[in-house]
Image (cartoon, rainbow over all chains, first blue to last red):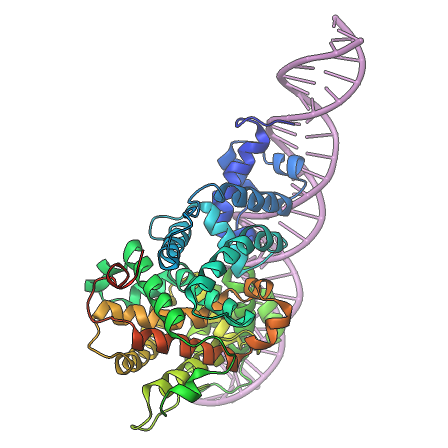
Length: 220
Length: 220
DNA sequence: ATTGCATTTAAACAGTTGTTTAATACACTT
DNA sequence: AAGTGTATTAAACAACTGTTTAAATGCAAT
């Protein structure tokens, strides 16, 4: 069945997205969705069986949409890993940043990360996993030697963590930043800082062996 | 008024904490709290006026309690900043980690960070701010030169971000870690890795000037 | 025109929610 | 013993929830 943008089913789907994203599954009411979609109250149950099934379809729709927006750059082969990482971090920040009023698709997926429902597993497999693998290849190129599998993952997490921080903890972060400094926390500056921070750590750290480097290299 | 542990008011306060922490303000019901506290349904409104006021008092209580548990070590003056950072990261991870079944006080405060209510501002001022300042003094000692104010904050965020990641994104992280690697993601190993990662980046990076180091130092 | 079927609609249902009420029980003072 | 103020209780209230129902509507095929 091909659905036009004005069909009742798609009207519901499009209206439900932003509302679910803002208030989560539990706090949004079917009545609110139907009012926004300008359809009858019973339509949700008619087309989606129940509220939760509509939510699952909404998450699926959000993921599909977000794949085409802010695509990761397709670098030429001679691009340095430093440049690639900078591009990766920039794109990731663009996708998730709250500063520029993140689209509801992002909010929806973030909610899934923080408070997973049944939609979370496929979200990771089909959306996060490929992106993360891509990041890890950059990490491999940056590192001097071959990385142990777990260290590789930890380094990838370190990069992602810093990007996510400015989304999850944005409210608190703003309270901890001196007002006169807030100019320096725009997206470009943050992307540059995070990239530089991780590049230094990955290139200069000794990650080849599992053992901690603190015990050997640092004074107590 | 001095309240015994068996008074109705404290019974409510103690019962409400874990429930609010697990389900958030909206999804917990007054009936559930009263059942857990073994008090009458009307007692919440009698002692706390309404549900939200009880929630605010619960957050306040949680913050007060958490200050005494997992205290940050009081290092001797000759302790190296590397060692202090390791201790800081370890304590922070201990406080917030989900692996060891975080106490409800932590969950409650995390919920406030992600979905701030009126309780968030005082939480930051009286709890997060002092801890963060403490971290920044360690960062200052680690860095080679004097840090610009905004860079100082960014470096502090970098450390906090990596600790928070393993709490906020724990579910997703577990799906991205190879099963055979999961042994290496225990608390001690993570604390060591995060510390080492940040120590290398802070000590070896050139953070004195505002300008990005990528443009000058890295090849394209 | 009539049939058949998908869609839409208003209304009702059954359950849960936070809050209020009015009656009762209790401890303490006078 | 009577009075007073606090604490507790069961019940009810009013609003809101997701879902269901049964009737009405639209519309293409017969």
